[in-house]
Image 1 (cartoon, one colour):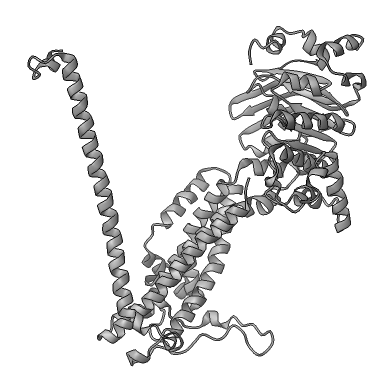
Image 2 (image 1 turned 135 degrees about the horizontal axis):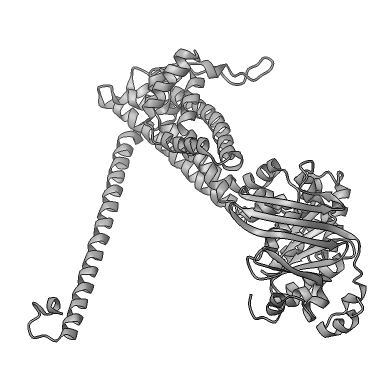
Length: 273
Length: 319
């Protein structure tokens, strides 16, 4: 941490001043994932600190999304996927058979690569999760929850007059923020983002990145990204994946300026990927 | 080289090659033209036949399409005979068919697509469902006669007819349900799972509404097929001459609603038409044509409804 101020300047961000590594929120030990016979993830162990942004970077097919989907057990929905190893959230193993994947996914929200709002109204998109988890009951409570979630996702001002229009009528960037509002409404502790900006233009991307930076005050955020610039801009810690292995992880600033592994350096300097 | 120059005389090879290419182009164009004309001819033949049938039907039957025709029971006198018992019978049979067929078909489709594990049992079920769609309808009639009427003693009534026709259209509904469920984008499922939906919530709140247009199309196409079926209903013992209506579904006594019509005898439009056409005398043949027109209009109407419903629902659902 002593070298931080220097690196901060080097990669041109200022947010690292408040990047105190909090207590560990997610701890993964020897996680392996198989799709049928093919091993997609090999012995991945990593700690993800609370209330900060951790970026997973690496070339396509390196296993970063696969690992992300282990954290909320989305891989359960793929019949051929098999996960081994331990992933603890607050010390509780999510792969424990006693853990209900449905409840887990309420605690660990997810935002996907392509914005995928429900083909329902904007209001209903946000209210739906709260309804199925029984987080609100009266109309006033729903109104309040939807308003609050949309405000947090930085979308409220743009849509407050058309909450009953379809969520799919919004622009791509607005749709993605709607998806973030939808995730927030369920009151998760962790938000997983799987390349949330890859389908968006630079302005929409900037808005989402700004939002991510605000959200880390309250949530633990894990983001998968192709863009190293994005990882440098939004994350405090980064993990580099290559061919299913976790090559290196550490503070983003350190990793981007003085990586330990040759492969990380090659990737960051654009020699492959 | 020897081969190429064999019959080309003194012509130089490159000129010869150009001539060959030109000849190939010509023959390709000729073949293309032949296929186009063949296609046009086949289409016209089918259309012309259909048009001839329709015109014949309308010319023969149109004069009989009066109000009385719809409100009269069949009669020995052709000019007084009507289709009241037939269209009421058709309506009630189709209502029963739709209720049973939609419930069984959509449930089976959801189960097979969303819940069933992929193994040899589901493979066999799948192959059999596809095969069922090709089974001649008379076979369903024989099955219904043996199983429902004789073995289970359900009687020769509207309920048995509905059950039989429901079996007949089951494969259509199951296949349509499965295909439209499969067409629902995976991203919608992920969104629902990602927010903590149970499997049933994903299916009922998101997948089914998105698949509804396709399911509805399958249901309506199935129903319009059932509407025209004659053979299985004759087999289970539909009446051909019936001068009374099934008991009314609404009664004056508590509980004001009655299902006893399910167990009444019945006839349906195609059977009535068949009965008239098999009688001597052109008067009755005109009645048959008129009943045919009514049946045709209902079927085309249902098909249009299917197209319209699909269009409306698709427009509402966009991603």
